[in-house]
Image (cartoon, rainbow over all chains, first blue to last red; front, side, top):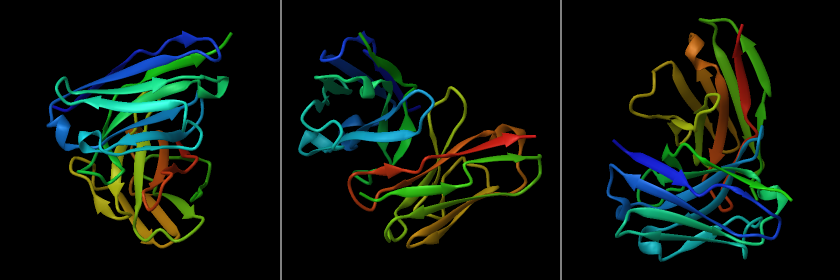
Length: 120
Length: 107
């Protein structure tokens, strides 16, 4: 059974940093691209970032480019999102999501999400 | 950036009724359009891929159609468990974008 378990969400002050983790199991993690998608409270879904197999390539939305860094550790089946210079607009539930196949950019499994709140 | 619009924003439907949700892209995206269902306090679930392709384990009452700029998600014979928000999602080009969602409520 595929499982994605995010952690690391917290209350952080504007300008602060945070690292989110996503522990994956139930599939060959190293064979799939992985993504982060966020959802602000009461709002819709917003793509944040995607990392390809082996971490060779990374992609970001304009709203986080230069502030967020996605990475992966295939030895521990873990996906990360390093977030810095956080703003109130980054407040959201952050989901990690597994690519449907090698790199198709849509998602067949999602984690339960972890809440990041940026507030003074 | 490709903008996706959905209509309606909200729909209140009686069980067994047919539901139709439309998604329009700001430019042609071929069939690179996918649909998700998100129930309250849950993460999204993939319903349809590439506009009309079914997903294993998804009930057959869910179907999709369309190509280019106009797409439709149809729920035949709505069931109470289908109360959710439905999102379309394009993978034609980066940045990936989602529609604003259509909330389906059960009368």
